[in-house]
Length: 169
Ligand SMILES: Cc1cc2nc3c(=O)[nH]c(=O)nc-3n(C[C@H](O)[C@H](O)[C@H](O)COP(=O)(O)O)c2cc1C
Image (cartoon, rainbow, N blue to C red; front, side, top):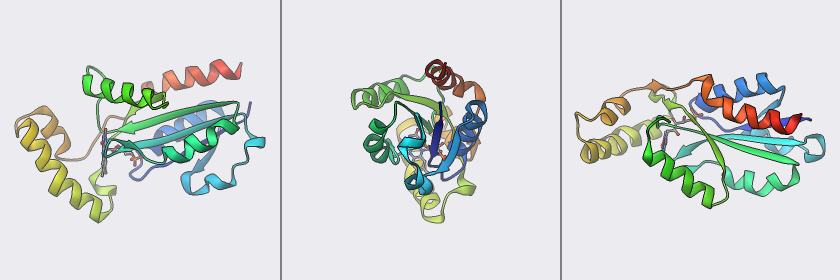
């Protein structure tokens, strides 16, 4: 089965997972900007990788529109949150499922160095003060998001790889 993997990534976390998944599955890899060149008649499976931005899955409207054209489709998202013991994340993913997005979540992190200047400004001036106010300066969360960090681990891609392999064989 032929697989097209489209990814949308600004600071590299989703791209890293996408490249790993493409390597493991033999998928053809496309940046989001290249998505229009994909013909559904050339592929059986569409995989879309993106990130959570302000609680929304960036670019998911495009995925929702085109996924019906493929025999199988899969969605994975990266975010700033750790995966384990995270009731807020569970709640978020459950709400996305209700909307029809059965996503595979892969922890990314935050990379302030790769953010555009306006986005970095927003993060430093609005997001950080908000976390500080809500969770306190000594909270684990505030300490974690105060500077760049990576939670990337190939192990988080395994559930998706398993599901892709299940439909391939
Ligand atoms: C402006 C902005 C808003 C974000 N909002 C969220 C969010 O609501 N929830 C979350 O888990 N992560 C959030 N993040 C973190 C990103 O989802 C995370 O860094 C992701 O891995 C970025 O993917 P990329 O490196 O492929 O662009 C946000 C990041 C930025 C820059």
